[in-house]
Length: 144
Image (cartoon, rainbow, N blue to C red; front, side, top):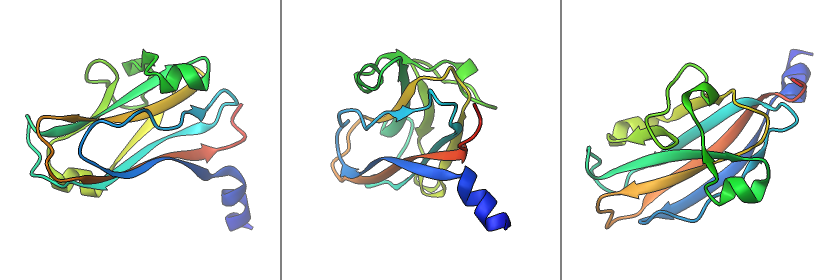
């Protein structure tokens, strides 16, 4: 019974999976307008040695439509992120150590019901591709 309850309320929406050396176009936006309580799970394997210069910044954007979010509409702000702060310009995580990226980030989204997406922004020089996965984890489908 507990398993059924969990699967009825939880799930995931894959936003992005790729091996990249440059900042890609925006991944698909998630429709959280129905109150899908959850957050972003970001994992990957760095293709280079990450540091303060050669890093991967993960920028989150929101919009009233999927197209607006995917076009890097409005950057999220600290109030949109549960238990954390936006660094600047919508950056919700900055991978500067390979071990941190491999272990992953979970960033709860508690902002306005809208559409949201995360774009991996490759800063510095990335001659070898990094494998990245961005998933929206739904914690409660019935939270409206």
